[in-house]
Image (cartoon, rainbow, N blue to C red):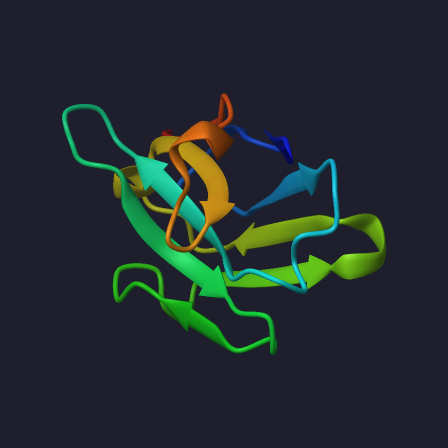
Length: 115
């Protein structure tokens, strides 16, 4: 089973930027689409960005033009670069396959956008 470990979260002011990383313990990016998800307090977990095996990218409307998903297959790592952060982006961010597998959820990384 592949393990996914997220990192890079933190506290940032509105308008700021962060880069999240998701390191996989095995090579899965060439056989499965990957997604970044987030869950805000009291809300359902949602998919915010995905990248398929061909490199095609899709984004939720709420983050389009602000977030960028990328991957480095040699490092078995995917990234989420977030800019123009807003308080409503505050959430725990996770990576997983798309569609997600229940036993692949990691601890996530907390992103807090606040002045």
